[in-house]
Length: 113
Length: 112
Picture 1 (cartoon, each protein chain N blue to C red):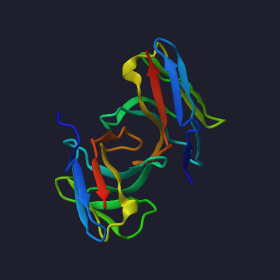
Picture 2 (picture 1 turned 120 degrees about the vertical axis):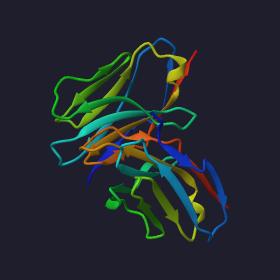
Picture 3 (picture 1 turned 60 degrees about the horizontal axis):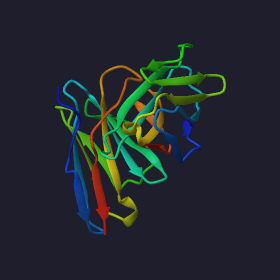
């Protein structure tokens, strides 16, 4: 079965712009989580969606937002981009039940110039 | 607060040798999972091994095994017979609910 698909793979944006990233989870998975990965910081949790509802949110400013659609696809949006937002953004999906394995996409590399 | 600490930013090992990556975590939860993920240069995060906190027996997966010390909140990964393909970033992670907490990673290089 197809894995987690993230689009686009690469993005270059200018400070002040906004960006939308997309994630299609594994078929049947209803939980989608987003992470920001930067060198030396590991993976920082952004938020998690389940059945179109945000269940958990990490410690990021309100410029970072997301949503999930009825087909479980998810988007995250970053407004008023800052240089520090340059990172690899990873999406992970998991099936019902607690503590299940997270399956990751290949990420979107965002560069803010 | 849930935290995961990997105190070894970089490690190297000779091909065919054994290496151990360290991880400690902090949580007040009783029911959780621990994971080691591998991220090669392709950036694809791949699950290496998983341990349920309620199981005392250490998980093993071929050349990969863990040393899980629940009281000490320690979860180290041992890679035996290291292969060139093991070169990657390794992340220790702790999961509760559908939220996962990751360490900062250990960059492992296998030297031919």
